[in-house]
Image 1: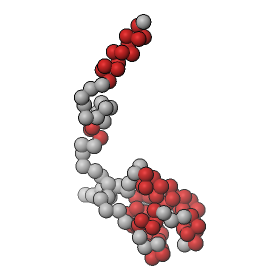
Image 2 (image 1 turned 30 degrees about the vertical axis):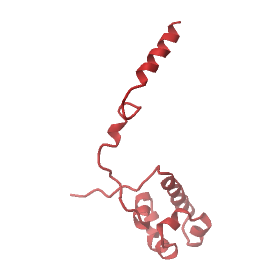
Image 3 (image 1 turned 180 degrees about the vertical axis):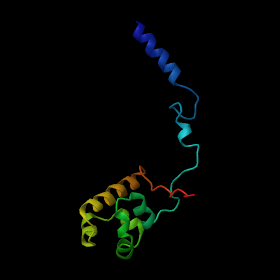
Length: 111
């Protein structure tokens, strides 16, 4: 009986007229973003880091378009001479970018 009362009390508490169901969730989106607005191949590879940015010129000349890079397969990157670990990083981040889970960060201003 006590469990039943507890469940009904929590249900009435959780249903609230807030715009966001999770308390404190709105604070994550209230600040301006620290991400690059327009993403191209150089910004994408620099955002990945770990030596991948060394292949910017090679990828830009062969692939050319950022949207094509997002759907490029590993064999195409292998033919460009990109090492395995860096191919994995590019493909992993491209997949996350397509899903909306990752974006390259803007470079902080150094003062």
